[in-house]
Image 1 (tube, one colour):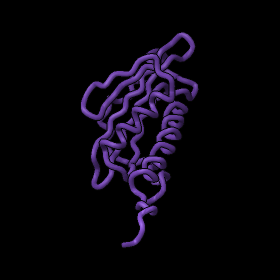
Image 2: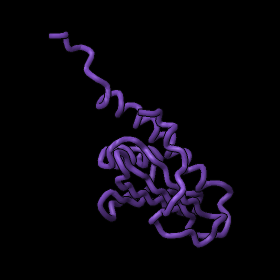
Image 3: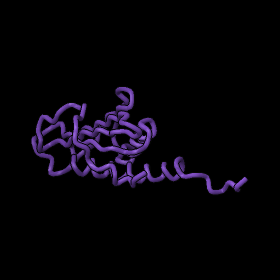
Image 4: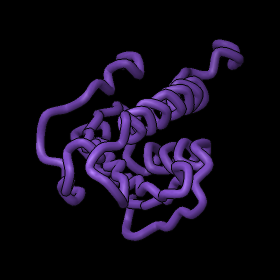
Length: 137
């Protein structure tokens, strides 16, 4: 089992809607070696740490959230799907208005991934580490 850094960007198809304006949108896909259901639960928690004004589950293992940027609103879409023994997380952060976002969407994805990495480490410590308190029998 590798470190969370193993979740570097993955090439492949991101099933989320394409970006209308490249300068105001980020699409990314990352791999984690944890079960999809667990990754989705952790991703929901990571999204909440970004203080969205609204979050909605729109499908199985898929959510969308709204994030304020001054007087504007941006959308963050998250979709988790199984992949081998782990899961892929597809992300799309997009500005509703304008053709350039001054790096806001890329920062949002970086912040989400930072929070998610911390949660995955905690999950692994809790669920995947053998219980060392048990005495040999």
